[in-house]
Length: 387
Image 1 (tube, rainbow, N blue to C red):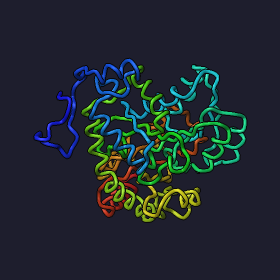
Image 2 (spheres, helix red, strand yellow):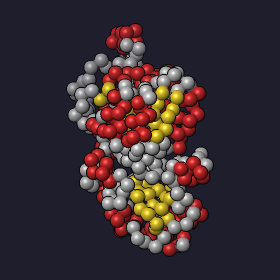
Image 3 (cartoon, rainbow, N blue to C red):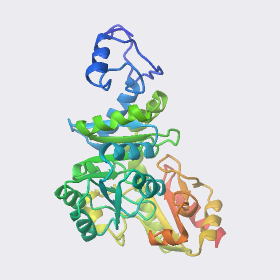
Image 4 (cartoon, one colour):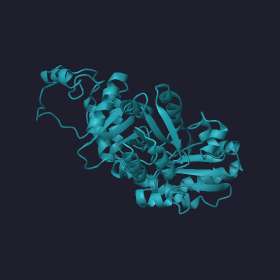
């Protein structure tokens, strides 16, 4: 690699893929190794890689546009982003206050792994501000919530929780995967750290597994130190694909949110549909919070139905769909459907799922880019076939 770019060389409009594990060791890189733990210069891809850094900067611009202090860090998965962030800021004896409504694997981290490291976890209902207040008043190092929960789509009042967390001396960490930065930017509402499964809406094409953390430069440095020591770095080619996804992020989400909002209206009242959950609906339980956090037309591309019947009914319904595909994950250009009992929350007992608001007839949609009329007709025929 030359020390400086040659202006006669082609200047690509798409970041190059630096599929290299190592780089020529310059004096600048050596100084960085000695004085800055190797976190600044590019010399070894577990520490830093130009393709990965370009994608991380693109993600930071989506979560914190115009910010000079927001730094993005990319990891190998969303769970790597969550776990690495928390291990970076928590120590044995610390206490967390955590929203009860969480992705299943995140719940496993908080019930199994962090307590084994000596971290105390208290659970609260994400929508119960009085419960947050009481729990945080007892002291905490971290408050943790998802912007919008999976699959019940409960919305966190981020400004209110952030105020309570900061008054208690706690950091607020928010998982923004389900809402996405198109709908809510938690850092603008008081969150200290935002994490994402970049596998989902940020990438948007169901072909990358990645995680992202966006926070201040000081906290980002602590996270990056653990990326280096734990080895959870992102592959350059995956970062290249993620960067591609960020370039179409707004146009994809605009279309997906519009279709989800229309289906949220048109599916209500159909035979076989007991309830429709979506933040664009007037009967959405957290409508007042949605009005404060989400602009019209930016209410999310996730849609949850509660069907008449049980888990067997849901299984017949999903397999009768022709445009929607039964699969785990979300956020791609194709519509994906899943049932919590055999995907995101399989590790919970039936009683635990009910306690989390997950009803037996619940089915989750991640709306893609198919025409709304085609998706509506598909749901209608699948309801009839599964009745």
